Image (cartoon, rainbow, N blue to C red; front, side, top):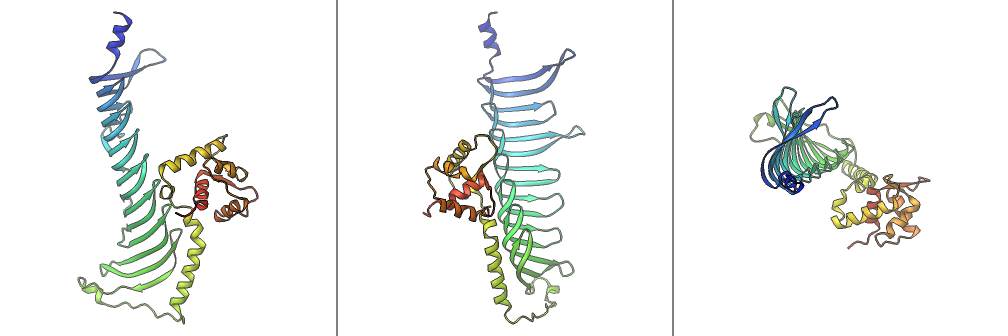
Length: 330
């Protein structure tokens, strides 16, 4: 048989029987490394198929151009030899992307994904107990979310980088009365209550025990509301920079704008250090048609809290935040 004939037989197109993969051992002989059963296109997995790797990992679902794309389920083989479902949902270019359910070490997340991480809106049931339902960004709780604690407490409010931040309400559960009896409304900073109002909740008509009062002591301050209002305003002012610089970039830019900023940053960051010096900011901005003055750059430094740094540098996220800060409000 000639070369053309052998190539034709070797070419994988359409639905094929199981194809086994192997590698040669240094000591001689071969060992199986995996197998695939399903559809092919131009010698790549394409369509529906099942791939099993030598470690026992199994993917059953859709493929495109040799990568997991579409709906699919990933199974992992445990030490005891049994398979368990780790992820079921949508994929894009071999990464979870879209909607899907993942379970790892007793923790289950059901929601939206982007490029392999939790991103969007979803619910997470934690192995240690507790449930979070709300917004996610880059695999962290970020935005508005609700958390139900194992002890019955309940929180609703803002989150920044996996921590409570900004306005939030915490409801305290009384085990004896089997109902929430107290609540805290106020500002949160780095996962802790910073300033707010702690009050007794009205009785629940469905729970008789909640009708037994547990009044809080009366405050001795002359103007408690005014003091709290003033303090909250101060906290928000103090934390505004932290909160503003951590707003997800995709809330500020379109995907095309983000790509243009990434290209501009990369052209200046020629050594691929992941940051550029302050002296190169002008050159980076010029790549996207911006021409900030020295006063503008000084304002950016102050906005990002770098005005006291003698040799400030900027990560891509900070460069993008600077571009957003200098952009005219539409």
